[in-house]
Amino acid sequence: MRFLFSRIQGGGVLPPRPHSKQVLLSFLGGTIGIMVIAYLTQQFGLPLMMAPFGATCALLFAAPDSPLAQPRSVIGGHFIASLVGVVIAKYVGAGPLEMGLAVGLAIALMHISRTLHAPAGADPLVILLAGEASWSYLFVPALLGSIVLVVIALVINNLGHQKAWPKYWY
Image 1 (cartoon, one colour):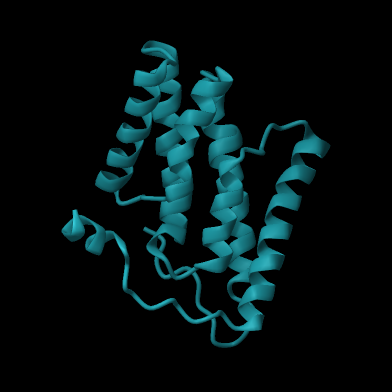
Image 2 (image 1 turned 90 degrees about the vertical axis):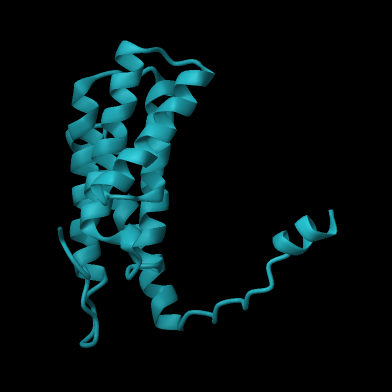
């Protein structure tokens, strides 16, 4: 038992606090990103908002150098995970087994396609819990909403002379 406990205690060093400029840009990015999606939803009647986009903003604006915060991962991850959610909901069901299968399959496919984006792991659950098994969900909100956030990240994450985001596109 002592061996197991010693492995889960951690022991690493707490990362340094981010600079205040990074905190401000993270705040602005998250605020503007969700505000724009909410505004577009309201103005055009498009259901662009989904809860995982809040976590996407955390990665895009607070950890923009992460592989999980690159455009390929954000857009591809949300699309693939939503595709899994729609397929499972349409053709398999929406019970506990199906929910676990959908999340596991989405993670595996994101890994294989090199589009791993942690917030997208929630997309199949959102779809299964809402009973949203429409093919249109893949495009609005998953694809269009993630593209809007990436465009906003292009502006916010490149403010300043020493910034260069994204690290890669594909």
